[in-house]
Length: 232
Image 1 (cartoon, rainbow, N blue to C red):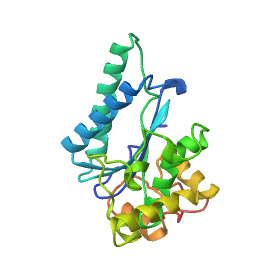
Image 2 (cartoon, rainbow, N blue to C red):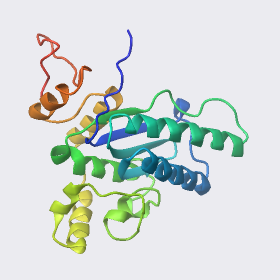
Image 3 (tube, rainbow, N blue to C red):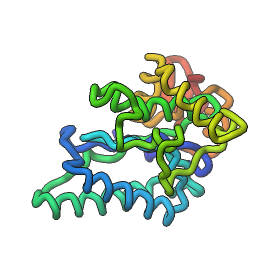
Image 4 (cartoon, one colour):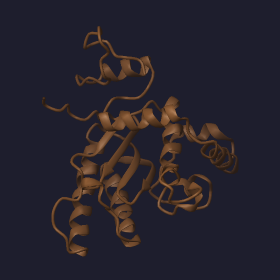
């Protein structure tokens, strides 16, 4: 069966996951991570894509992005993946593919899932047992949102402004939000939607998306026609 094209639409947050082939490491050193982030910044600017959040795990990455045109995320990921893989192979004297096929991605409803997705991204190193708290992990955007680090290429989503009237209030609220953890259901929804490419949101959100694309945006339930989106 032919695989569906990726769902990528301007103006919506995209949760993107890219893994190493056979789950192998894609970062051997801090220099690798610095190079990846430098090129992420470069291509985000080139293709007009806002980077809201990221985490660089040993063998995969998570990104939260909003493009200004439909091709923004595919263009960014293609350019970033190719350039980083070439550099990685050169400096580490290796050959062969670095990435596990195509990157995985989905669109999420911002007012329902954006902050949840950011929490999910921030807590990745904690779930992996790498650190006890996201603040202890250097290679994520978490410290940017709690006022401990400046990351020039990070663009806070407008929804962050609803957390407080001052920077300190927003930073405190965000820190508490992440500290409160993530429901198992939300973790499963965010993982499954990204890997299967189904949009994540309520019925009205899915209907709005489906009006903009001929690609099916959600999986079908038994008894439903192909033009009837399934509420998440």
